[in-house]
Image 1 (cartoon, one colour):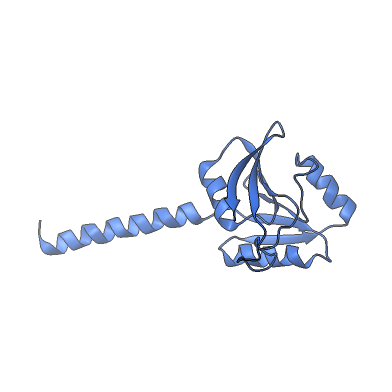
Image 2 (cartoon, rainbow, N blue to C red):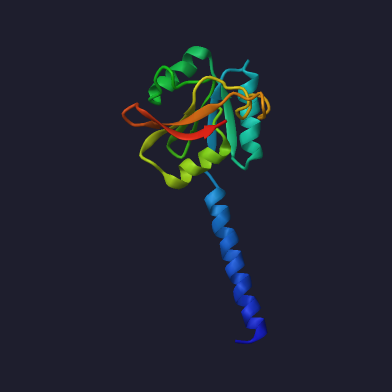
Length: 153
């Protein structure tokens, strides 16, 4: 094989690898439902956009937001301040972008992910670090049960 052809094949392989990596990182649009007065919801929207997600946000009255949470299959103890929808999954609360990407890559048979409540140090809820609250990202199964999808210290 000639030197130029070898470089050409390596270049093509590199380009294909980059395209595949980009495809794995890409996600469909994510719609976030929240209330107008919630600053941490806005911070999570900015965080997700900064992590490459195509995010749109819509403000709802609290009663309408709670209704949408119930319609999505979320149960008491699984909720937070905002609810998002991406590629058929619900993302409840301050879920890290890394876990949303993992969910979309693995495609489990589930409703989606949740970080219940609003733990300090989760995305949109202050800085991670020594004062951050430990929290779990829960995978919500279709029967309403949960499994720990990821743990954060």
